[in-house]
Image (cartoon, rainbow, N blue to C red; front, side, top):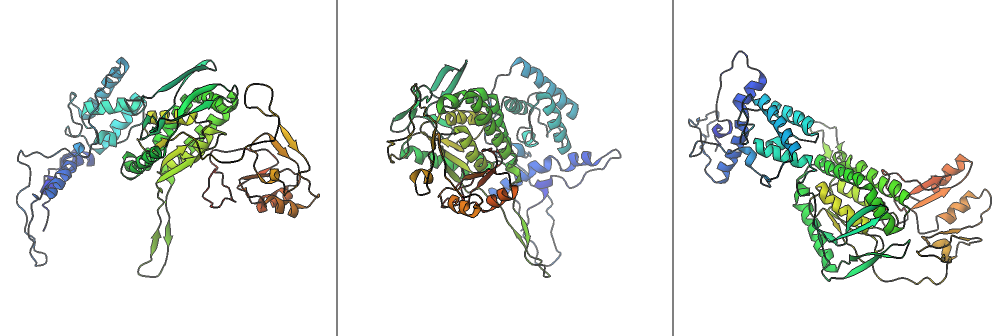
Length: 523
């Protein structure tokens, strides 16, 4: 059996004129009729009406099909109308946008050499692939926004094309705002606005059980707001939304390059709202505003931009297995996302912790659920709002606020609390601390320093004692002897080694706890 080539090419020959170029021949003979005809050919096969011929069993004997197969009205379906997810969105243009659209109309007229109305089809008017490239580049200069060739193929009429371009210039989505129950505060000489609900499948919703938990300003002990407290069923809904987004949602269909563009757009929105994010971070976690602005938010933005640049560079390898003739076997590897990732972050550096964990996951194509710390969840919720504005599809990011497991000991002794509002403790120093003591083995996570003695020059003894702890996140050594420092760095069991300076993080470095039960524990 053979599918007749008639409905694929629609013509078997055409005249070649003296002034013809490759482009003009391409337009007249193959394109765009050939592309639209492929779509029609697929339809013919699908509904069983494709012309078929039983071929002769004699070699080299083919009986040609004399007639072209077509539709009853003699027209082919426009390929650009296939596989469209959404219809054209009716939007109201601003006066400035109307002027820009007239500039786009001039570009179309210059390319097609005819008058353009709203229903003019770019390809039906004779445009080819080189014209698509020209159109994209010239319109990018007019609207100052990113466009791809697909933006023309998927919106070939003038009105559709202009509607899509305007939407992109506005940030990718006409519905840039998302509805939620907002908390609005006047603080730090500005108005801040953020959600207080769970974020599941692209929407802010109340917890199923109606429970909430208070969020307190640690500097003043004042109530900021009550935040919804997720239940087990809420978690199940978020997991299902993330799973669907990963397996069959829009996130699973876009290219790695488009994924990177979304993450860059998210970073740009974080930059645009950096003062608001820093203010929320300051009142929620107790960070000094300047530190929150420069480090908490600034480094978070750097992290998102760094991993956005990685999206189309996560590639596999081609490995020669055997050079033996005749096969010369090769092995191909491919790196794929793992699926739904669960993220849990602590109270310190809330937005940075979110960014360090989430940016790498999304860059690789995964979807995520994040549970921010019970005492500092607000920047995670504001981040979720910005992710919608950036165009991140529903289900890709889910934020579940609430409490953790209620267990652990009550602190009975420690540094004295300062006589002022807020959760402030005096700095505490312990000397003559021995290795078996509790404070030497556990992470205090407060303004506490311990001092232990060691014999001068006993590097091996110091390393043995340092490696005896169950923690392996970071270590440091202060010395004037660089050889001792490098020897220490090589043998200490820690993911980060600081040589003669305090901790300094980079957006492009992951923190790994080498003593964690499994080495996939990323901080």
